[in-house]
Length: 277
Image (cartoon, rainbow, N blue to C red; front, side, top):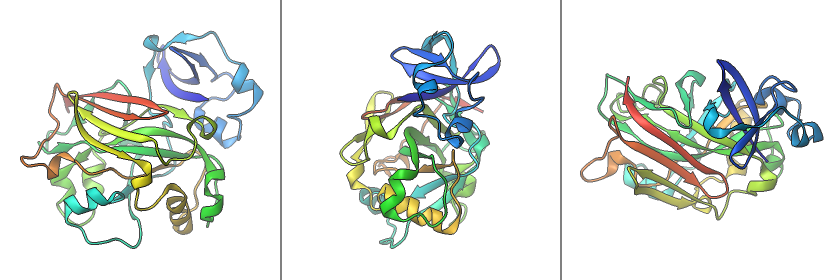
């Protein structure tokens, strides 16, 4: 199953994606997050019910989960990316946070802040937590996943490098794209051989399979849930492969008029233009 959040006639809505249409479901549960909290994504009323279908080109997408309680991001989780950054071997995941208002959606522009000209792409897999918990064992981690989506962890590199803390470079408004939709585990499977690819103006910049992660999804959930309780609708963004713009020679940064795409096998394409804030 695939579910998306969207805006229609100024209202926040969500629904079930079927081909090139979306079936509204917000009259059953007001938001996708509330349906996840109710553990309802696999119920008959959401699989078969809903309002009159809308064409996908009639709606404006919103971030998959519009107001997650937590967005936990993972750095240095692919060996080729760790090597290109010159960072030492890591024994534990590198975790930083994003704020919900730093996110934007599929089809909307990513905003390059006026304070920087070093706006970089980072294609990633996002996990949305279904069943919450604390100290979740890796063996049980997949039972806590509501689904998967694409993420572009847009990075303001000069602000990211002000100190050893990543936060400022990761939280400018409308710099992280999340979408286009949530794909449930029964359709996506477990992240392993699926490919992720990031393209800038059609050129392939990043490519990997999820088996290349240093810390797999189950380990990330175990680690994160040890230091903070995970709740339904929380998001874990699992890290980016090598090939980021800042480490190319010469560096490649996103600029207004560019188009960046993150494609994941079994999910689809998250596409955004770039604009100046």
